[in-house]
Amino acid sequence: MNEAHRWQPDIRRILVTLDTDERSAATLEEAARLAAGLKAELVGLFIEDAELLQAAALPMTRMVPHQARDLVDFDPASIQRAYRIWSAEARRSLETVAAQWRIKWSFQVARGIYAEQLMATLRAGDLLALASSKHQRRSRTGVAALTVAAQAPCSLFLMYRRWETWKPVVLLYEGFKEALTMGQTLAAIYNLPLVALVLAQGEEAAQSGTTAVRHYLGGADRLANLIQLHPVSADRIGNALRDLTPGIIIFDRRGKLAPEIEEALDAVNSSVLSLG
Image 1: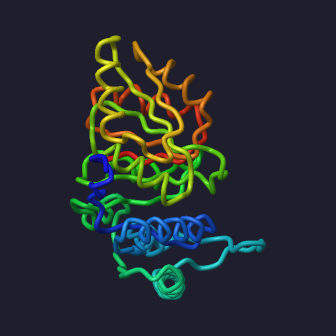
Image 2: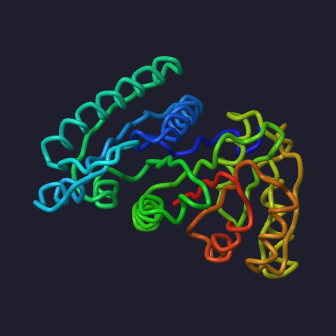
C-alpha cells in the first residue's frame, strides 16, 4: 500500500453557514456528503446580522415586502421574530440531512458581523463550506468568507453548484502532501477521476514534483492523468484548467504560487477547495 493510502485528511469539523437562500440547501447536502466521507462533524451556523438589526432600529427605516407596493415598518422586533423562525427551519434542515447521512452534527446561532462571527467559530482542523458562483465570490458574504479563510487556520470549500459526474478532481500540486491526500480522498468520495497538475518554474522542479506524486499516489485507482506545467503563470494555469474542465480544484494556500492560482480561478467555473 502506498503512503498516501495511509493518511487521512485532518478535517475534524465541516462548518456550513445556513440561511434562507435556496443555494444553502444544496450546500448543506454536499457538506453532509463530504462530512460522511471524511468522518467529520457537520456544524451548522446561523448568523443574525447585527448591522441589519441596527438599521431596523433607526426611525426612518422602512421596507417594501416582496410583491408589495407600500412601505411598512421595519423594526428590530419583527426582524428578531423572523430570525427565530429562519434559524429553527435551518436547524431542522441540518438535523434531517445529518440523519440521512448518519453523521455527527451540531447547530449554533450567532449574532454580529458576518466575517467576525465566522472567524470566532473557526479553528484548526475545520473546513468552511460555502455556496459559490462568480457573482457570489464578489458578494458581501463571499468576500467576507474569503477574507476569513485567508486569516483563519482552516480550509475553504467553495461549492460551485452540483458538478457533473464526468468532470475530474484537479489537484494543483506544489509540494504539499496534504493536497495529495485531499485530492485522492475527494476523488473517492465523489466517485470522480483525479488529475494531478504539477506546478513548477523549471523543468528540474517539475520532474521532482512528478516523482513525488507518483511515489505518494502510486497506483491509485482514480489517478487519471499526471501533467507537468512549467514555467508557471496565472494565464498558463488558467488555460490548463479550461482544457481540463475540472469539477473540483484543490490547492494549498501556503504555496508560493497561490497568488497565481487564485488569479487563474477566474478562468473556470469549478468548485474550489483551498487548504490552509
